[in-house]
Length: 204
Image (cartoon, rainbow, N blue to C red; front, top):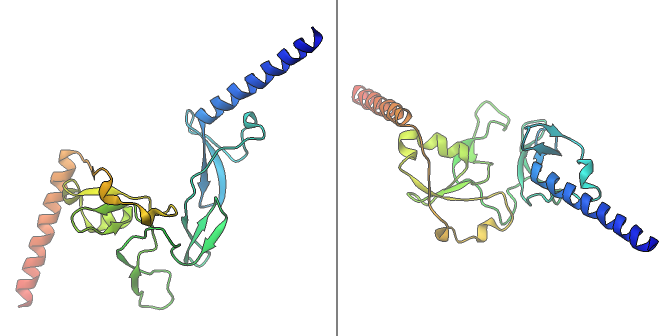
């Protein structure tokens, strides 16, 4: 009888810890801070963050995505770090998908900043030109009036083996914007084109 009571108490404690741990999984998510190069725990309900693992997890921990992160050293030179495997690379890691745009390499030494491959990972593939873009280059190349008509495929270029995915099989996505924002972008684009035409005619 005493043994049964002890086993029952042990089971109730184990079950209570399991329930508490499950609630912790639902409330928190583990994220990586590129600024501090460390993991933190984000509370989905309160939006607070803590740098130490919640005590309710006990000896367990939360799974994190196996992905590469674009980082910058103290000279602003780009490099890549995978916090899950703790691997580092000065070049775009193999079997990932990089943005295909060209950008000015502002971290390069010298007065003239050369233009070269974008150091960011791709987040989408445009159905129009079939090129891979990061968020920054996508928003730079196409304005709101253009983007709300351009279909694209989602890409997680920072994840290992993302270069092996058949993107044609994925669902198409489309950016959505308020009508007034689209109209303003269209008007701005037309004014820019008109100014460019006037400038070219004057040069002739």
